[in-house]
Amino acid sequence: MGLSGKLAAETNKTVDGSAVLKYQPPPEARVCKRPLWQLFCFKGKEEVGSPINLNQTPFYLFGKDRKVADIPTDHPSCSRQHAVLVFREVQVDAPDGVAVVRVVKPYLMDLESINGTSINQEKMEGARYYELLHLDVIRFGLSTREYVIMNESAIG
Image (cartoon, rainbow, N blue to C red; front, side, top):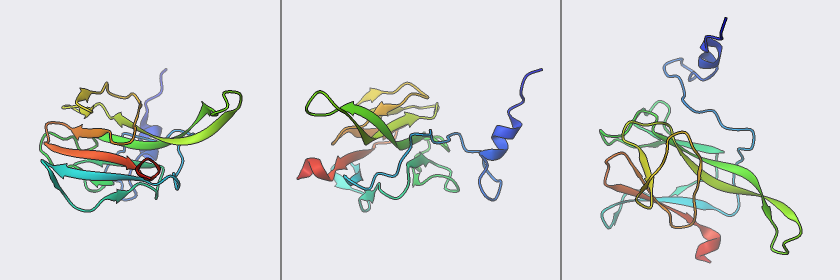
């Protein structure tokens, strides 16, 4: 007999039980205090709202469901839980080429949304992590809003 998945669904519910979260962070998810990453939203050439500092939690959920979304995407083509930006601790080669160091980097995953997510005009595959780099441009669904991720150390 197979597992029903009901226990997993129960652990993914919001505090008030109104929504089942599509995403659970991986064990390597971390809060990234430094360098500071920020997200800027643009509609055309005009900035919308204030920059969002991405240093409070290991992940940020994008979507139309304001009960669970950390960053609301109100466009009709966006899903209730559309995508997630998560900071993951990964191993990389040190500049000396000998040692290995652990660093925290931002990644984006489309949560198998209907209308997809793109980075720099390239559509993402669903349920797969993509590393984000300084000045990457993110779009959700068919929305014309663009989210630009910036790293303070790259601005320098």
